[in-house]
Image 1: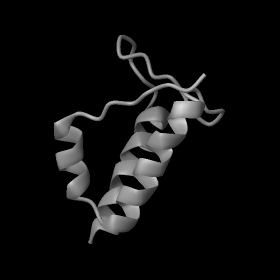
Image 2: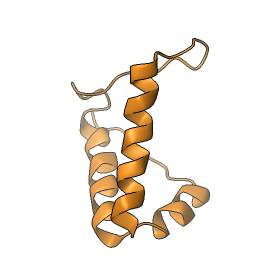
Image 3: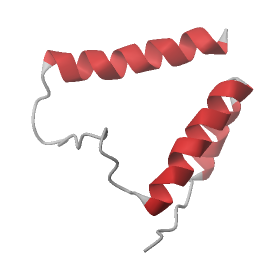
Length: 71
């Protein structure tokens, strides 16, 4: 079963700020979610619980790498 994905205008606006190489990787990852919405490497984060330092560091590290590529 294939799912549909709707991208909000605000997300499109944020994506435009990224380098083309990063945009293509993000779009590809989003498109892959249509066929496999729960890929093996994904991890569900519960917004109601406090996340461990390693989980938050993983997210922060991803954001830092995206910023470096933007430059």
